[in-house]
Length: 501
Image 1 (spheres, one colour):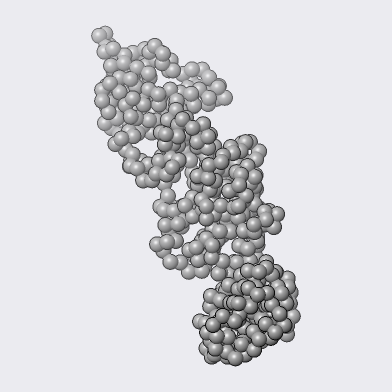
Image 2: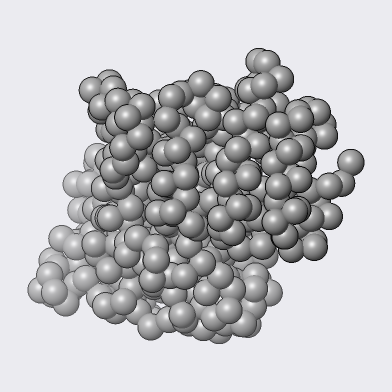
């Protein structure tokens, strides 16, 4: 800090011309520094110029590492209530205006004043800031002295009103959620430089899961935290619209959700519509309606992204539903918004229900008995939907009554037939211990084709499975099933798949 900067601070504090502070006489300045910073100065004839005295004391305070205490004091509500004879209601907007004034004075010296909770800190951007991330929208720095993070709008975006609006909205929505555990904490917004300060986290969820293989219970704990947090957000009538593994952070073991830049507060904030796909959310997590038009979104859009996020947490792939929560994800990621969960609250309740169900030994035994007796209810349906591809294939081979139960499942969940067939195709060879085990998968594929179930893609997948068993595994049983379908008559394109060798 050079001497001229101390001079600027001193003259402002002394209440000289154009200052926001009240004029302070020499004796008043001496009393201020004596009382608040432990000096024993005396006012006398020939006393130095007021601002020189204040400048020397502020420099000494800085050497004592008390400069942030100085600014915290002279920016406090109590200080301005007393100095300017304001009410608390009047003092609050005055302090906000004063903050902008200070940063305008400090800007030429590459310093800024930031507010963290109830304290104010003077930081040097060049010396104290380390760039830790950069995107198309903003740069992210860490403050070496405090460990806090500063997110600043990129200079080229300062001329774009849409980017400015989005950046300010990101801060404002996050600030309104400051009492929600699991929302990243933000402290201060500078609307002349367009940056805000927030707490520092350890890493993104993407980096954490990529570098740390986790067991099922740990993955479920992460999903539980995220859905709980987003349930509260939706209960506040706020949507995020940019949920992804890059916008969720970990601080220790605690989840922190950030980046509400595309967020929308239905009660207070109007949506900013844009045709720029760069501002529509990350593509792997983005619901189809959001790709078409950002305004045509709702809580169901967050639900879609949360479904993709559950996939990523469970499998490290946003598109892979091969896990016990695939029924949850299928409903959450339906292409038709009206078929999804209405919000994260309902999705969270269903997640807990599936988790509790799959961990209950009593319910599992109950379902096994139903399947063996070829009975079907919602518990059986939930069980089938929670199976991985390997478990599904193992059950088709070894569990009495399971194939018949699968057929009933097809009738009740036509939209899930392709998923079941994909699972079979993925793991049927790994599950077969004997050649004849493959006949069970031929039966399932034949059932789909014989009963003309699902779309052409569904029947195409069934034909591929039946052909695989017939000619790759070389099962005569499957070859006879193909002959019966061809003799009865089947679509030419499917017939080509079935008889291909």
